[in-house]
Length: 270
Image (tube, rainbow, N blue to C red; front, side):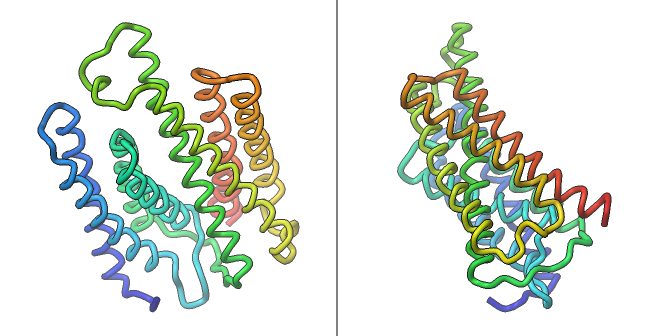
């Protein structure tokens, strides 16, 4: 795909943000009883994703390689999350996730358009390109899992306090919400495992990269926590609050490891 002009990047970014915003407003109205506008919501969502992809490519791709600063990688991860959720929503009732996803996508797009970075460009060979793809997908699935855990926590709280109507009545059953969280954790853990393996064995001088020790430490902790959660669910029947808290804790470890090291490299030492 060729490099795009800055004007096209900006136009595509604002187009995507606008359609994400429209889809969010329609979804909020629908959950409040505003009729069946789901086809229109999905149409706006997919239009936003296409424009988001154009904007993300233009921001990440540079003459010297690929720019993976904080805002650039964030809009890529948000794009991956949007694609995964919208695609999965065609066969699963995931519309509640739109309320968290679309504002996140808007924020990352606008930040990527407004905030630059001194982080150097990276040239990608097939091995490093595969590692980046696996990492983005892993973060995407685990971000969706964290978002799902937040909705599940709210749903649990509402049911315990006897609030069964309103928005709660339009969400999928609690058992289905928990089952989907488990699917997301399995997918995210498998992809994170593959990303770690590809980074260790296929990236030249991986351990010599700046910030890699900090990132690897927290990534390993998150991987271990997700592994324990999945084992505990399978062997000990863990569910509910334990799965929710474990998922959110593991996600925080990933964020601290990934964004913590990049923030220091870009904005403190850069």
